[in-house]
Length: 507
Ligand SMILES: Cc1cc2nc3c(=O)[nH]c(=O)nc-3n(C[C@H](O)[C@H](O)[C@H](O)COP(=O)(O)OP(=O)(O)OC[C@H]3O[C@@H](n4cnc5c(N)ncnc54)[C@H](O)[C@@H]3O)c2cc1C
Image (cartoon, rainbow, N blue to C red):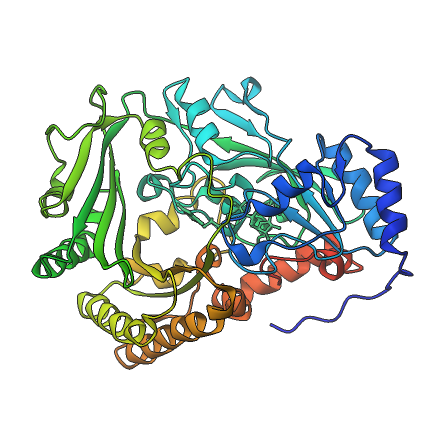
């Protein structure tokens, strides 16, 4: 997957000149270091290592603002970054040290596109999922989006996007009617599955931040007037360790059989451990779309869907009941306002054929490896096993065509499981130790899985560590890689974006 280096490097113009020009053009939308807006934008990230010190923060209001700024940045060869919801962990995700940080937070329109049968939402790139679900709920509909309200819309969609309703409707990126994009040469195009930019449309369904700056996503919504059944469960294993085995057995059962047998279901099942806080727990967020009328989420019992009977009977605290998906997502939100000092965070991922022995071995290796670094201050590990069913993978095929994630062949063999090691801790100096452990777990498990023919060489971009960049692109397969490079060649011949756009997973 090597690609040729970009050509034609323009003469570098001092950052001060670019800052002056941008500030002159957009006096109320540019924010220098020290200003309140600068501080608010540059400190609100999920991962503390994403925080950096750009020379200027720019808040575009329209796609024309984005185009005008990009023209200045490319003409002066100035590095820039694009921040959506700021949830991709990693030092290079969205802030341009010394460059310009284009933060999309003021582009937050969410409105119905009534020309498309009233089922499409026009969504600005400054939005987070909570607002979008709420808007969809106004018409008794749902979007296929993130499972936490505070996560950014664009970053999630262009990397794929796993939703509670993915079993029925596929990836978030499979539920897009069109993308408005500012290209490297500052032209603004609208890409759909069938128009002249259908190659760009497909590239953005998994190809992430490599082709242009997305200034609007039109999301296809689906009817769900009566919502469904949701549960927030928490199980404390510290005083009852035997429960942990029962919980693991229950989520294995769901991953292996429940998820594909009941496409209306979706679940996040997590093993949580915080050694210094003495926490050894599990939590699950369970969802099933249903036609029944809604009441509210409470600890009182309503009928548990058959698919979640085992998971929902593990002792612990539980809130469950009938609810709209919008309300359910909102109930999963981070505390508001968010903590002023984010923790250090890192993700790492790998994918396997779903298998009970593999999941148990993963948990064992995970426990063993983290036991060596329990003295990392604030260490909290969250290990998640995400089922990806064959129906999830193929959901888009008969409508808008394939995305570029490249999972079709693997899904022929059955349900896949994406493992996500999500870890947080306090101090930057512990990053190397934590990430070394994450990497060792992944490598040990991949060797184990290769020997048993359970390994799938695919890494979910949105759950990956930056050092998995090459593996992410290798995992989508040669044809998809070739296609993406051809699209990049068409829309950014001179490699301008590749050279100047800092952050994210780069092809
Ligand atoms: C708490 C939490 C919950 C999560 N839940 C889910 C989940 O349920 N399902 C799931 O699939 N993933 C989930 N994720 C992963 C999530 O999809 C990624 O972290 C995603 O990158 C977040 O997007 P963002 O816009 O918030 O991030 P950002 O860091 O702002 O952006 C991510 C990348 O997209 C680029 N980008 C942002 N905006 C634009 C734009 N307008 N045009 C072009 N490029 C842009 C950025 O430059 C960067 O490279 C979760 C992550 C966290 C931390």
